Every structure is written in C-alpha cells, then in structure tokens.
Amino acid sequence: QVQLVESGGGLVQAGGSLRLSCAASGRKFNAMGWYRQAPGKQRELVATITSGGSTNYADSVKGRFTISRDNAKNTVYLQMNSLKLDDTAVYYCAAKTLWSAQYDYWGQGTQVTVSS
Image 1 (cartoon, one colour):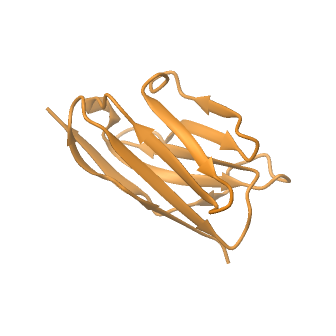
Image 2: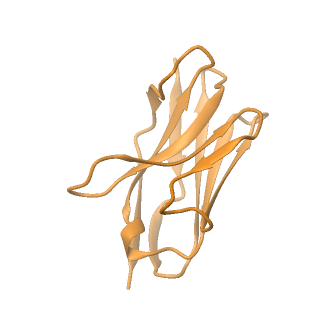
C-alpha cells in the first residue's frame, strides 16, 4: 500500500551538493525523514520534518543539510551542501504516522558517494 521512493543520489566531489527526493504514496505521514548507512556503520538519523514544518538534524549535518517537505506532493527533500567524504552512505527515506512513535516505513535507499 505504502511506497517511499528515493532519488537524486550519485557521485559528487567533496564540497559539492546533491538534492535527494523521496516521493511517498499510499498514505499521508505526520513526519518524514532521512537516515543513512555507510558500510560498517549503523544506520543513523540525518534529518526529520513534520507536516507542520518542524525540523531536526543530526549534529554531523547541521548547517550543511536542509530538509524540506511538500505536503501537497507528499514528497520530502534533502538538500546536501558542502558534502564531505564521511557523508558517503546509502540514504533512506523514512516516514511515520501520527499514531506511531517510530519511523516504520522505509524506502529502498539511494547511494550517495562523495569523492576527494
């Protein structure tokens, strides 16, 4: 019923920018966010945004990444600027309903690779 489809990943040099998109279908979500997972590392929260526009960022990306949401399109974006090598990871879109305490809907992920 529910699908989250990420796009926008790719290869970029350090200091460059990428914008990720996540198109959701099948349900409206109270909050959406981005997680990432690098090889050998645990999945970590990158940023979240509620339907009302409240945002939260991991310290590692604060000031460089911006999450935004188009509620009409049921789409969330992640603008990534000043990319670092450590930003290399698979980025996953996640979502939760008003009734859930957890982000329990997930996309398949999009690869972001930052090169030197």
